[in-house]
Image (cartoon, rainbow, N blue to C red; front, top):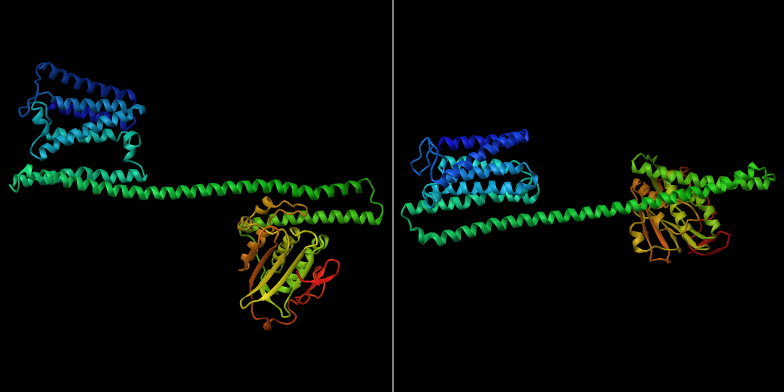
Length: 516
């Protein structure tokens, strides 16, 4: 390497260092322009065929201390300096990287000539070749120029964590090493006299083809796997977005329904309060009627608030159960007693089939009553007036099975799939006269899970009624249930649904008929 080439190398390295350390743009411009002008002057000297004293033009194999850099060397340095200048401007980053890549390939090609003892550029341009040291320096400087902005332009294909960039990095090394290694082996075999170059050339080309096809095939397999993984992630993302959108719509409907349900009880309460304020509740019967109206609507408000609080407690896992041994017949009696007003108001026939022996489970009495009440309210609400509701209990080997069945509106398969999700019923329910937010079944499902039980629903279709099956683990054999603890329900006439033999039922008006 002659002194002029060393100076050009230091100026190029200085530009790269200034650029990498975010030096003022003017400093980078100054050094790069000075270096580019120097390279241009050298090229002009070769074009004119003479150099100013004391410099002389380089001649391959006879360079002196005063020799100028070869025309090829000056041209490669000039390209690097122009690439550095263009790298400052993002819109031209691809052009800059293309120039640096061209210098890199030319330097590597020149080095390969020395490796194979047949310098390519020295053969076609005998007075303008580059030395081994100069070619090595140009390789390093070209690589540094390429990585001035590694995440932009052409370099994005090799940087980053995307599958394509990872595969490109893996492919780059064998792409360079395979032909160089194969060429060295072929050249060494020829010099050793094992074969002539023209005889082994077809085999050499075919070997390179097979090796590159193997590399590309492996690269394609990895990209295919990455594409499949990305497609799977995109499907999951779309599904999650659809579920989020649906949940958002459900909550919008829920908020509208909540406002409607809060307004419904407030209107009668406000009317009754206005009557009392004007002093019109003078008779005992009228005062009692107003008091009943206010009490009934306040009960509705309390139910709404309790449902909302229970949903929040279950969501945050702050609900606590006070489990103890209890006869499931007692739970059913209390649930029927709570739902008596709605069943009587709609004139439903109600049949209750209970076993003679206690059916003992372990659970929270209040929460178990809440589960059964929600199932009965749902049956009464969506069964036309004068419909039939039945409650039956069966003690299986390990579980107590409670079935609540009606001959009401029934459900479609689409509704059954999302029946126990919050907010769903608020969206699909058309009958809102009885109030409620459509959270009853969702609460019943979650409370059943806390009791280690199962709650399922079945319907043959719209208009064909519904059947809810509640299974709770038995605590122990009924025979071991202590006398006097959780006594069985009173019979008959509990909650407007008489506890009678399985073949009988009692209507709300007291008529007896076949079980529905």
